Length: 129
Image (tube, rainbow, N blue to C red; front, side, top):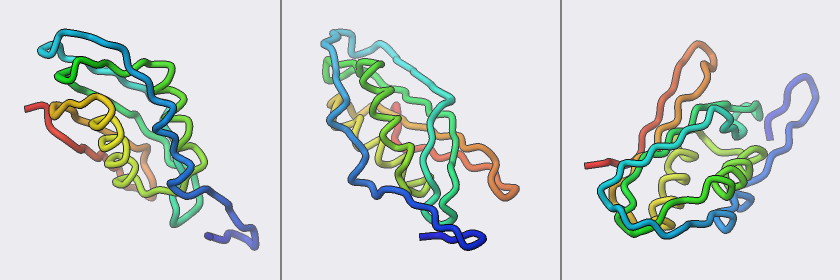
């Protein structure tokens, strides 16, 4: 684990991410575009041990007849807070979990991370096409 000034930062591994928190509700409108966004997503950089903050945007078409329930989505995203995971891997993990949950091929996950070390990072996984 990273050390700064003789202090050790502790964080959890990906097994702490809780896709079992996610719930859906039935919704029969496969051509409706749905976008939900939060600026409260955070995880821990496994290299530095410091927090990474991002805007998380979820876009999908409910082809599988399901929508994600927002309170359950909030609890799911909070489960990342103490997890050491690279920005790119967090984006892919959210994509994989939601794609399976919603049974849709038309889903895109975008994370727009706060500047770190002078670099801006945006990760995009998936496609709406």
